[in-house]
Amino acid sequence: MTDIFDAKITCKRCNIEMKPTIVDKCGLQLRAMQCPKCNDKIIHPADLNGLQHFNDLKDRTFSVKLRVVGNSHAISIPKEIIDFINEQHRQMKKEMDNIVRLSFEDFRELRIVFGEEDEERS
Image 1: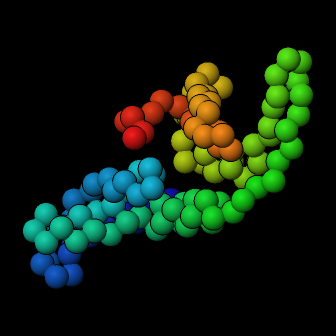
Image 2: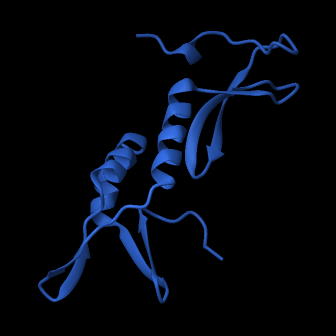
């Protein structure tokens, strides 16, 4: 099957061929085509669906149980979240097994980061 971005796409304003680029939205890398003259962008439809799926998951609050495993406590991460991460980052699955960071942000807040952090959080 041929991808829609494999075709020549021209800007409807400038009538110039658009060039492939990457747009960062909410930490997701979205494929796009951009006009070199007016900078108008068209985001790949499949990536827009992924962004919508992310926004749907982000707006939900999941209730999970805190369990005791040996000398540690554990929570389960809902399957929907793990499935989404795997869809977006196929090679990240191996990284997730090796690099998961947990930080105690506030009295009532824990932060879990999968993979490497690109920049420090302020």
